[in-house]
Image (cartoon, rainbow, N blue to C red):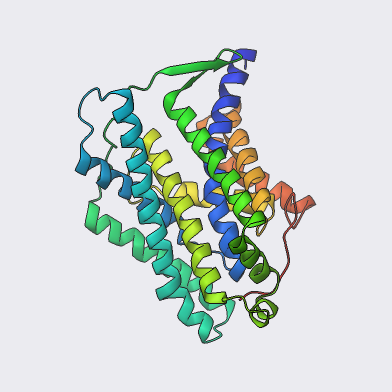
Length: 307
């Protein structure tokens, strides 16, 4: 691999890693408050992509929209994906998980329900939207905007990276500097004590799901903007993002960000070194190696009692 190829793949890895990080945050947020691996989060990601497709189909960007119109179409698509993702995640919490929580169901039942919800949404999307993949309408002409050490960065890659970074910073500020963030941290630390201190557990958990759903939905749009929209699109990115959350330390938001970027870079660098067929394998190798030496992940898991 030449030096130029190294920079090319490093840039691609950072872009992909930022996307994994946003998806991984959804897993880690829910795990933080419920200690639940929400396997249906990959379908929230998929529904968000379909949300952006529906919005763009309705507004129809047409051929060669102006720069201002392009910004508007991107914003609309992003809002649509966030809305669909947030509503889906809220519905999951309300319909699937809250009744179990109120009945004090064992964690295994939560896990089985998450897998069942994932299959339900997966098949529902296939039934409603068809089994063939679709492509998002073109919102802008995708051109290179600048280079990093000779590696070109186009508008789609810049949009993906910038959106992911802005969302991660916004979430970090929300969790660490707002009343809702304090509630999330309190529930994650000890839900029972948080309840005694006056924290509305149901409200905090619902809002945590919505935040994770919004992030997952927007990530679905960013992914679909580079690839295609299909009812199966959530599986591989979802599994990889879950691995990223574990690598960083599941339950730790900054760990999810770090794990996402690390796995994105490793996956991308694997392509020129070993071939594309080893790409997904490399993410799991990273997961195994990290767990061998750091069982709680790179930044460690935050330990608390589940709601």
